[in-house]
Length: 211
Image (tube, rainbow, N blue to C red; front, side, top):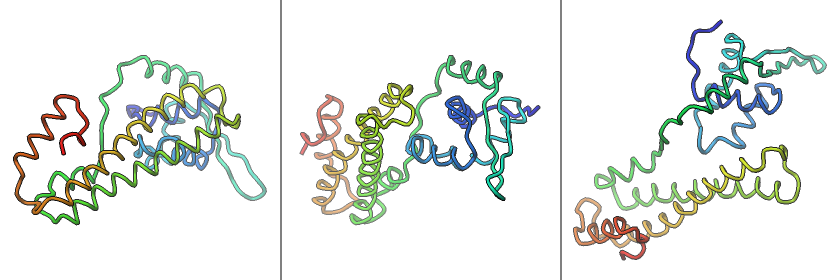
C-alpha cells in the first residue's frame, strides 16, 4: 500500500471515478472539459495518479482490449469512496489564484504600455474562453443533453461561480485597457487617479465610476 499522502488532485480523480469507471485518456478529457480553469494542475499528474490510487487500494485497474489496443480502466473501491466522503467533510483549503498576467501587471511599471495592454488582453481572452466553454456545457444541460443529469445541480453551482467571475474580469479588462491607454507613462504613478480608484474599491463601487 502506498504511504504517499493524498493530494487534492487525488481526490479530484476519485470524484470522477465515483461517477463511473474511466480510462486514463477519458479522465484527461474530463479534466480538460470541466476542471481546466480551476484545477489546471490535475492534468499534469493525471497519468501517474490513478496508479497511486490503485497502490493505496482506493481504486482498481482492469486491463481490457479493443482489438490489439490495450486499455486500462480505473474504478473506485469502497475504501476510495470512504476516503472521498471523508475529504468532502473536511474544511476546504483557502482558494488560490495563479495568474501570470497579474504578475506582469504587478511589475508593469518596469515595462511599456503595450506590455501592460498585452497582460490585460490575456485576462480578457481567458475570461472569454471560460464563458464560451461553460455556455456550451450549460446549453447541453438546458436542452436535455446532460452527460450526467444526476449531477446537473452541482455542475450549475460551479459554472455560475466561474462565469460570474469571468464576466467581472472581462468588465475589468475593458476598463483597465481604456485607462492604461490614457497613461502618459507606466513608470510614474498618477497619485490622484490611484487614490480615486482605490477609494471607489473600498466603498464597493465599480472601478469604472472612478474615471
